[in-house]
Length: 291
Image (cartoon, rainbow, N blue to C red; front, side, top):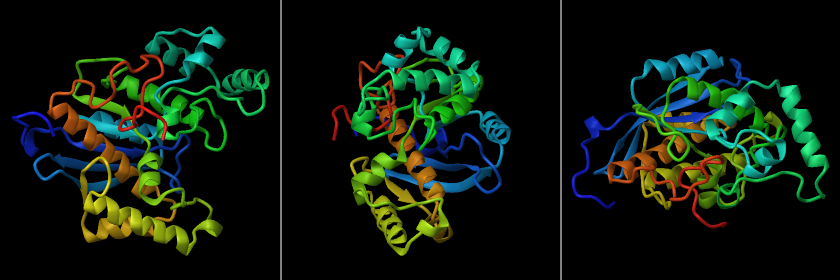
């Protein structure tokens, strides 16, 4: 990594990796991986997992921590094309505050009308980052309901006073980045599924894909170049969780660790590419061109 003098481990903020749910419950909580970056060892140390059955508990936990760099598996913005079509504010913070003030039923009606007016095969508007990351459009309200994840999660991160590189810079020791674990997972195990919330689909083939994914992460055999360090119990938890939530949280933490390493080496935007659309944002570690 570039740069001469990198901060020692003890001076770097902790890492957060968040597998998010817009409607958490004891059965399907918001899951947070907590860890540390060791720049010299090119590794991220997983220190523990936290489960939050309510959004209020998740928000309170993040507020209790005075500093962190977090990778959050939820969209941080809407497509510029959609925002322009709806006549919403083009300033990111104003747009997000407007969005947060709407009821989900209103959002669904507006988004459905937008889609209904478009031709088959191009119903949804996309952000520039969706192609390179392989992510779902952030306006989707079903399968997966990422529009609700944005509606539920982003306003709470804004309320924490977090810094949003590429979107809204604040003098804050809490740094929030949009992450997407599926992007790195596909690079390592292809399009094989490694998880499912449906018990009938929690197959040995998916367990095998999780095992291969974990092995690659431990060895650092991926383009982020960081090894995931975890103890035997943590590895067993990630391997045994057929929903993939623990593994996804750890991957988000790894993506946040890569971003922190870029920042420690002098990159002000935590590795985000220059010229990021300040309304749409960008998924951290996503390449610049479609894969």
